[in-house]
Length: 162
Image (cartoon, rainbow, N blue to C red; front, side, top):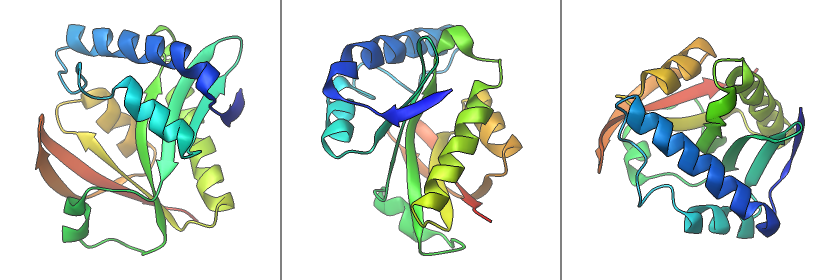
């Protein structure tokens, strides 16, 4: 699998991948992502800020963003370290889910975060998305707290990088 930073030319394929994911989530009864989030503008901003990444083979397999930005609700909980990055908008192509791509991409994200000098990765996951929760829990992320946002309850999770 090839990993690289996204460019503005990638935006159309990213938007197609995200819309396909939203459709699948709705079919699964998960109403986390909608017409407002994530939006094309979120990905344009990620590209502009140089923190949006793609995983590819012959096609776009996954997209994710890594930065140090988080909601202020993150500050209410005890975390293991102060030197962390935050994972946002991880999305595996619906056509390729269930084939280990999420696990492979998370391993890359961990390596990338270590190479960037971070001690931990933080994220939030929708409590009513069993697939994403399972992926993170199975790959060593630990729940540190929870927040209530627009769509409901989200778990705030962390993985210490060794």
